[in-house]
Image 1 (cartoon, rainbow over the protein chains, first blue to last red):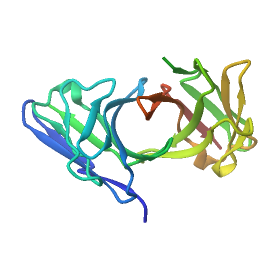
Image 2 (image 1 turned 45 degrees about the horizontal axis):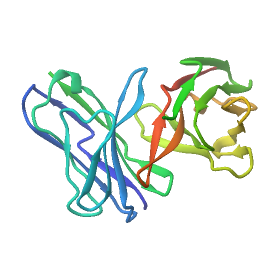
Image 3 (image 1 turned 180 degrees about the vertical axis):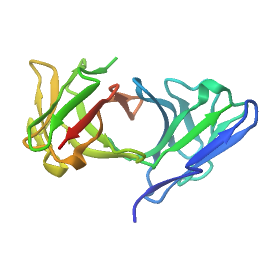
Image 4 (image 1 turned 180 degrees about the horizontal axis):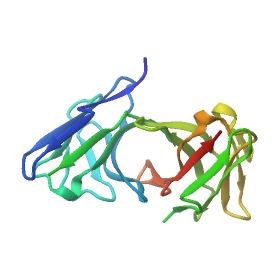
Length: 110
Length: 115
């Protein structure tokens, strides 16, 4: 089944403790993105990747890192999480203009 | 830069009555437009997309949207609401950014359906 998977789905952590949210797709898509969703703001793009080893900042990249060492995986890294990064995070991969979203990761930073 | 405005943050309808979710966009050229739906505790699912073909676009679950260039609108409609339609809906415009089609999301409209 074609899908985008994310892990973990739920995470509670404390300020400053490094964490990684994994994202994997099995559709051989070149483009992958990370978004955060906050009430009243819709989804905002954090980072995107056009292909392996090619990544670029989206609209809200501060406090986040990404890597794209292989086509299927696009992890999101929070080196030193802060409470303002409490949010719902979505990974997506795309073919042309249609993006396919993962199920989301709900993060709470205390 | 392109942008999307969803005119209602909340819409409430009775089951069996029509649904109208309003969306206006701004774009310097002919855009690609999408509607996504997010059910509680679920990811986003593509409902329909407009990419410069027919202006009336039919999607899944009986939804459709009409692209009106003169009004810069892309409103989502359904003739008869079902309880399972209760969800959050996002209007999205696609912007070409350095060879990559970036999605610009509206703030979302939460649809409630009452018995």
